[in-house]
Image (cartoon, rainbow, N blue to C red):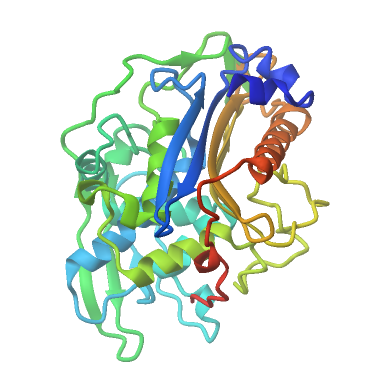
Length: 392
């Protein structure tokens, strides 16, 4: 892995100062057997679950999967990802989201539409609604059951304190035809705060709050936490459920998996979702690896990237599966790095554009080029990844 990274001069400025950039990478080769079943060979660079990084929007992926799983487990007739949903407010830091009736189904608040908004443009309010639907306690208990005991999803993306994030909103669903309430979920609270898996965690030399600089490290102890290996495994479990042990598999239907797969790789306007227009949300908006989130990036024919990203507090991450119909290649690639030269958290002065995104673009391109030359025991049959599905 180290030699592969050092073979590309574009990567050297970060790779040679990897500790400073807190760089972690997971590159997973996929070899198919005679029956086209996938076999995974993982290669790591500085992977360390004890090295905290802020996962930011990476937490959205387990949240969407667990929301679909919960719908299945409720067994309420007529309750689906398309059912109109209203969120109330019953505690401090809670905000409501009403039922919306619209001829444009994309504007209606539903589990499915919240998932689309999260996967297409990483919408934070949509995440908050599904965090509230799941509840802090059940969400984290299920992650532990699936084999992620150190994962912690304990915060909304809102200025709520640790105590307020333990309280989640009342929610109700109505039948779209009859307008009758078919399911109500009362307000809830997680009365057993979750311990911080790494103990006390601080970062930086200072942080900005209320318009002034506080000259002490920023405390991430009670923040969300999702190790790079965990989120990589979660993406793999969603894309390759048949190759995932039963006890680590989400309880989703084939339609659920197809729905997630579709929106993980689609571009905002390529998806046909009416809320997102090309003028604001360009093709590479949520594609850091390979395209570097560049508005000028030209999509490569035949390349599908199924991914989730994070960008916050100077941390930049992308966790992705690449499938290329032209090269007949596939692989998983996950990376995170920290680009905060001045050491001040929350000042908005990060090297995302000058260092982080160019590095991730070059990393994806380097691995893609290597994969195009790598020999395999059997050619991959990737037709399932390139079907013209229209999942709504």
